[in-house]
Length: 382
Length: 234
Image 1 (tube, each protein chain N blue to C red):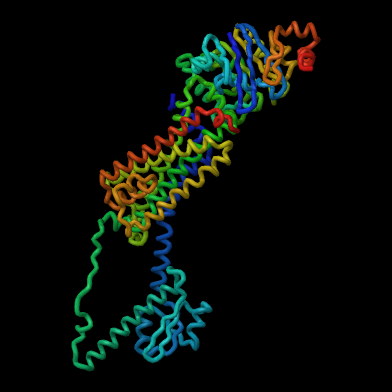
Image 2: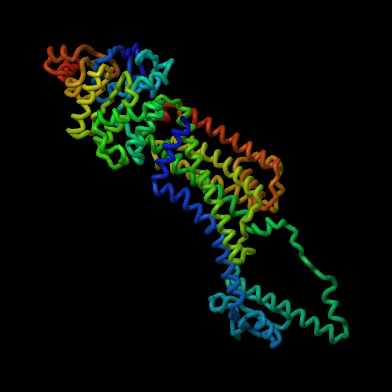
């Protein structure tokens, strides 16, 4: 009976083009675009900037330094007032040499800009110039150049291959997935509750010989199924996008690329689907209390912001030491588990705690929805 | 058979229905008449177990409202003016869905055919409800209410918003359903409709039943149900 009720809501939802686009097509297309495109675009812009020669306003630069600037792909242009020229955006960066004082000029409010790239190149040229001056001074005093390098420095990245592959996606994917899980179910949850009240179709259902708890569970099931579909299409989009990037040999070190082991993929699915259960129950409970479709939309919109806050916390996860009980905090536990799975660090204990607590919160929300279905002032509020 | 026993409904400080008692036998059509706000919709919502009575109870085809709400819902079919069915499904899908809720099982197809032929829905069975006229949509709402051939049919302002043809079809259907031996409770503020389709009537005013009896008796005494109602209210 519950499935018959859910099937009718699903059929009704799938016949609405808007729902189809929002639930299935959008995650499939938008998640990969959101995850990969900005970094790819940034990557190609930065590498283009590295290859091209930027003009720099200079004053007082010695000949040796000018040569090094050219080697760094900079085009030095003698300018009477480099600071003014950079401020007026005629040059991305400038260099002022006055005796033993060297000043680099740039507009650095935005970290990712042509100016910061030119400043980076200037720094690099000046480091090389300093080395050259030191080497020449040592030579004049008959000392070996090796004095400049008393030890060899090497940085080794010991993060897991999965973490290296994922890169910045490890933070982005959990957030995107949760947003699309919520978006996926939202339309059905609202349409099946506040929408039904508004259209007058709920009354016919309530007059049928089925328990109200069955109707509530049918609404929840339909919402969960759509959330699950959105999760699957989103994941599919990420995996396909990642595979295509890998095949194309694109700059995945900048974007990261989702490539999961089977166990991580299964873990990811269970985590996302258990969150879909929580999200669906909350959406049905909230939407049912609304008088109209619009009111329900307003009631459900803040849920996305609630996801954003722990997602921001997740960005700082590298500086934090998540305690075991964090796996019991709603939403944050899901985000943490998803991130760990993407990084190849998923452990059964925290995962089990995440799944069980998320389902428990979902059960509480569902209980609230079931209670609302018993209250005539809620059902006939419109 | 519908037996209403001291039924009452209170919404916070408002007493919508008070101490309501009446009976409707099989083959009888009872008009629950009164102006807007008289308590008709509250009464029908209680009888269809959509809302819970504050006092009293009722029995519908032997099932008690408070003790056997599921059985009551299985025994009735209700149609109200604001009631709609999902408009993205076809008529057939809608009726099959309700047939599943009424657990018709293998009887689904013959019952669908029966309802469709009775209400003239045969040609639109595979069309989405949203493509139908208001009158045809109302027929779908009625079809879903009678699919399981309920012992009691409850209609609440069911002709509201219908054009003259659709209204005529509804009134003819109500008469035919009563003549087939079913119990009909017809709630309306349109007295002339009740005069045509009802065998008995009750006047509801400010939540209380101020008169009830055979329609013919009221018409004989006052010329029409409307005049009878006005005389009682004054």
